Amino acid sequence: MPNERDIPFLALLNVSLDQADAVVVPVPFERTVSYGKGTDGGPAALLHATSQIEFFDEETEIDFETYPLIHTATPVVMDASLPIKACLDAITERFKAYRGTFTLALGGEHSLTYGAVKGLVEDVSRLTIVQLDAHADLADELDGERWSHGAVMKRLWDEGATLIQIGIRSLSKAEYVLARDGDRITTFFAHNLPERWDEAMRLLGALEGEIYFTLDVDGLDPSIIPSTGTPQPDGLSWRQTMEAMRAVFIESKCRVAGADVVEFIPSPHPPGCDLVAAKLTTRLLAYWGAGQRAEVKR
Image (tube, rainbow, N blue to C red; front, top):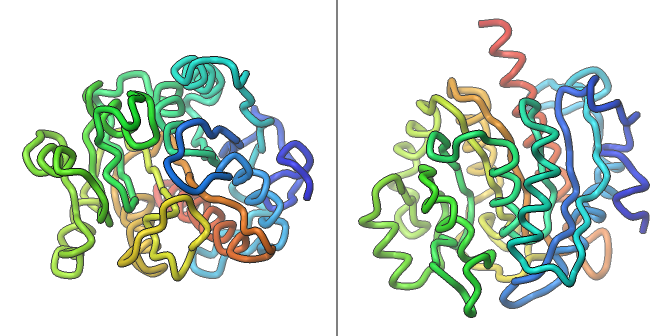
């Protein structure tokens, strides 16, 4: 399989950064995963699979041959001997170059979100993070590591971010108490999501200000994308995921600074669900593009 240096997103002409409407950044980073491994291969697999996705998206009527123009950046590669925090700082430094342009990170484990957010956003305390995920990621530390993928939302919350979590169905008691009682955290658990779905979509559609959208593929039901490190049953349907994207990118008045798709592990026997994950990633960009188009019309 080609690596992520060899093929641009959707196999389109890779426009320069100064011409781009959006930037796609592969971040093949894996250091703290808890169970299944291989997320460092996710970016290459996703980029390779997008070459089989149509340029035209029928749901949003986006034609990627004309808009949005995408710059596929070179991968963010870190020295494996560095401490985890130093690796996240290296991600931050790279992402500062993309500040002001919508940037989609392809992971890689979920801890990379911290680095991406810190690079793209001037003031984390003014940011709302919309998180589609099976796990709360609110641990103060996991396996003795404060910068673990299971603690990434806690680190960002500590810096003042507001969290909206959707689809959560795996967390410790301490995380549950924080999600229930902590300020600036709204959590929609999977077990009562059917009766709260409309509430969740109203909240997303009413968002204003600066937003970061993080999509852990284990947030979806494993019948859709089983190829992830810690899949959990009772996840979001494809249609629910699309509704959440539509609410954030099209219906709300927010400014989306960036997004990521994380925790995908390439299928051992392609195509597996690589194409499904690629479609998910492409649709995220299509919804963002449709939202920008709608904003111009307003």
